[in-house]
Image (cartoon, rainbow, N blue to C red; front, side, top):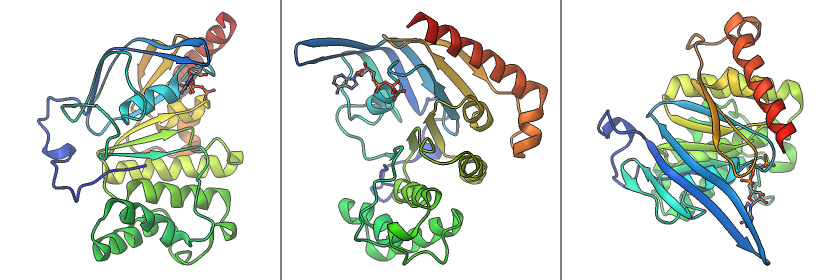
Length: 274
Ligand SMILES: Nc1ncnc2c1ncn2[C@@H]1O[C@H](COP(=O)(O)OP(=O)(O)OP(=O)(O)O)[C@@H](O)[C@H]1O
């Protein structure tokens, strides 16, 4: 997870307003391993604007994680161009934050220590990092748990710590790979509401991969659905729901039902095509 504002680079707000935050043109990814060739992504064109909340849904194995990893510079494009904040992605980027399905916290460090680990790896100023960690813990409802060890935290709280760790260095883009997939249904809903609130408050650019249709539609300002491998974008939906979204009224709204019905239909036919 994450990147640097402390690196002096211009952030989203400073970038020319017409430039996408992430620009992907003609992306193809093919893996060769152990004598096998897997064509994971094919012909992906995608521009993600600053401040967008983009969600990505698609059948298992269609390349969603690979797409996030390419944006982060963790997986190399076989063909095509990917730029982040106007500069080509060539190798791991420091200006992204990454949240994975499992929080992967260090057992021997408390909540604050786990968040500050990000700062230590990046050599960020200590006092600044501590202040920011405390502010993030307050924003995500972790105040009072700063000294709790991972085993003392619920799954939802561990994911909050993981989110704080991803945001510590003020990344331009937050990439989330099925971040709430391991949580129970109610905690997951609560985390959705919180993430949406944090996004509203910060205006950050978020790209989130999910298998949950409700999550994909509730959270997004735009949602894309991918088809089976080699993954490509089969449809995209601007989500015409209010900026501020109460959870239950949103799920009962006609727009939510319309879009989620269509996403479900697409995922159903994608599954049959596999
Ligand atoms: N490093 C790798 N080496 C070889 N094959 C890989 C590698 N990473 C991913 N793949 C393959 O690429 C395809 C896409 O994988 P990816 O994890 O991106 O899919 P996904 O849509 O995120 O799947 P899921 O929803 O099940 O998490 C899969 O067939 C996977 O086995």
